[in-house]
Length: 448
Ligand code: ASP
Ligand code: MG
Image 1 (cartoon, rainbow, N blue to C red):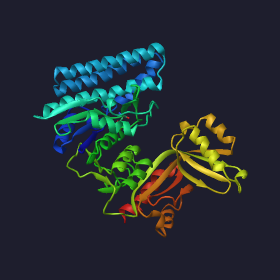
Image 2: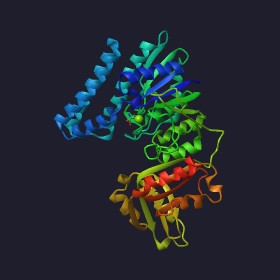
Image 3: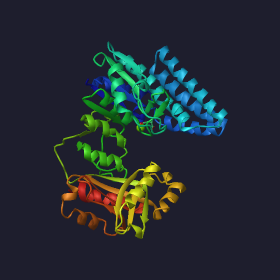
Image 4: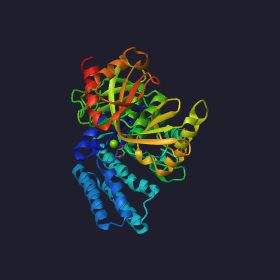
């Protein structure tokens, strides 16, 4: 198979005007599969709805139900959708009502129940989009596809993992008419083999689109968002940041993992597996070229981009028993593994190991006491991880000197250097994060 998979994020779906613009764009781009996010803010509202329903706060729940209902019905009206679509929207809204009531009665919003509730965001927006696209796609067939029939996952509710070979099988049997049909489907949501609705984690629609692109062996994956591509750093931090025209898969993987919000970090895995080029561009300014992410790129600058990741936690584990012994790292990492905690950067000395963790909430008392069985534990919070991303980083003499000269007045808590050709990262106190990025951007991007 082949084709173009285009994904539209929440802001590209936020109102009737944006939906129309996005629909026109998919016709222009000749998209074969269109993957949509929930309308902007709706996933947050649905999560809140789950919370207030669980606490039986009926007034708040009613407020949210009405907000979501009005928003979607208004878009349907403004788009002038046919009755059949309005009815589908109403059916989904009444499902939302029932689920919220069920959660209130049980006063229990499990991760499984929450996934069903939040799935409504994408299910609603995909109906609106199908209707809008059908109006414009004269002479072309548009079909709404329930992605749950295709995107099979395990049962880790809230953060489900895709079953890649199951997805490939179903793409082949269910997405057959790529030549004559434009399929519109939902991002973010999936289904277990037993039929339970799951979600892939916040921001997961990019990942869904990539999985479908892999499933149909697409020629191109397009991620349409509200910024004109991937920037050399967050322009809100450094206004002189520039949009990157081309970046390699390897660099982009580091950039997405270490802070750039523009792509969900897992998106590139399927694209890399199938070598599918990814375009990141703005549906608001589609004439701008955007950023291409691909295996081979022409330019390989030493530093292409900088990322800032806030709220990092540094866990330092030390014990003299590590001296000349073996198996210590294994024991430590086993604790992190048993608790399914993801570690980002690591440094070690002979008797201690420091690791950074993105989500401090995962560091429960249980984790800490399990770690304490193996080593002394020291925890430092409110740090920022600074990453420089580019090429040949660990084979370039003088780079570290240049970096630390530029920020000579800042205390650096931990440095990770050497493991990657594409990344140099270190931790600083949160209060220095922004100015460090500004100075390094000036030095390595603006003045280079
Ligand atoms: N609607 C989901 C979220 O807000 C998924 C996505 O937008 O990618 O997280
Ligand atoms: Mg999104």
